[in-house]
Amino acid sequence: MQLSRSWLDRQGEDRALLQAVDAALADLPAARIGIAVSGGGDSVALLHLLARWSAQTGRSIAAVTVDHQLRASSRAEADAVADLCAKLGVSHDTLVWSRPAGAGNLAAAARDGRYGLMAAWARGSGIGCILLGHTEGDIAENFLMRLGRSAGIDGLSAMDPLFTRDGMLWSRPLLGQGRQSLRDYLGRHGISWAEDPGNDDPRYARTLARRALTHPAVTDLGQDPGGLRALGITASRIAHTSHALRQARAALAHYTRLEAAAHVTQRGGDLLLPLAALPAIPADVARRLGVAALQWVGSSPYPPRRIGAGGLVAAMGAQQRLTLAGCIVLRRKGCLHITREYNAVRDLRAQTDAIWDRRWRLTGPHARDLEVRALGAAVADLPDWRATGLPRPSLMASPAVWRGQTLIAAPLAGVNPDWSVQIVADFTSFLLSH
Image 1 (tube, rainbow, N blue to C red):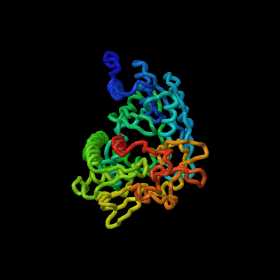
Image 2: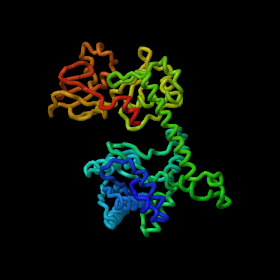
Image 3: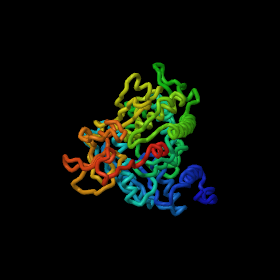
Image 4: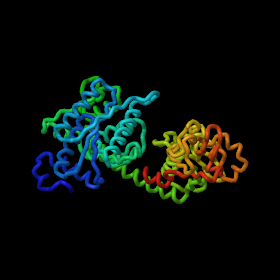
């Protein structure tokens, strides 16, 4: 505990919230702490709580708001946060996100953009962790929306209270708090907040989930006091179940790591899963192993969705080769051999001192007129490529050094010993971090 007990005892109705925040921040690094403040009630309450916490503990904090420019009121909302921060004596910055050309899923693009902007802001401001204002209401709403999409344990599990994304540590200190308790807190202190008009728009699944949790059911005969609440289903109880599922997910991840250590072989950027071992592995663990392998080989920030309960073997059926999630899965020498798909990387280019395909780092005589591209069809010009033991698709998708159209090095194919290549994070590290 960083707050003194005597001070907490004098805080009346605010005591429980302040103590919960203090407990959540107990193990955070000593660097400055950032707070993501949208202007909504949850994040504004977090900001106010943290300002009081900072004043008592001496820990440095800073706030940030991302203006997505998706609503006419977005700038005014960011300015209102800046004004509140000025009153509280908290440093504040507004970051502006512009929708990239060709962005398909707007909500996902905005979310990714928000995290990326805030992570860069934090690194430039000496901030070691950013706090988010998610509450048990967010957990319950996510649960209902994902239940409607037939989600399994992973989808129904509570969001993590502490996680890493975009190279930054993030914390959710309010996950055990109800949304109404935060509104009551703001009311006691005379603090206003912005309401997103989308929260009342029935076209959004989150709006429907929130209504199901907070309003009576509506039928042709009028309001029905039944519905979820008549069954004892509240946001708090759903959040409790979701937290239990998160513990189950952690246990499954543990056993997935054990099976990976026992059976999976990493060869270059490929993974080999012995077919003979898979039947003895519990079905869901085997499925998780296959999903993780595809995500790691495919350099994807998200797991593939097309792997059903039967796992990779069922997805392949009688095929000897399957293209999936930016990968090629081969039945080869008694194994499922998972390698990167050349078509997924054929247009990727990077300087030789940059990370290529999110996982390869090259070492050698770097020069500005060199670049990293996939080896591609040039593998056919290498007479000894079979001596590598890697299948042709693996080498085609492997990183190579080019000067224009001239091949300078292909480390995995044994071309030019002046260059070497390493995986940034191996499969074991990936499983630990996910």
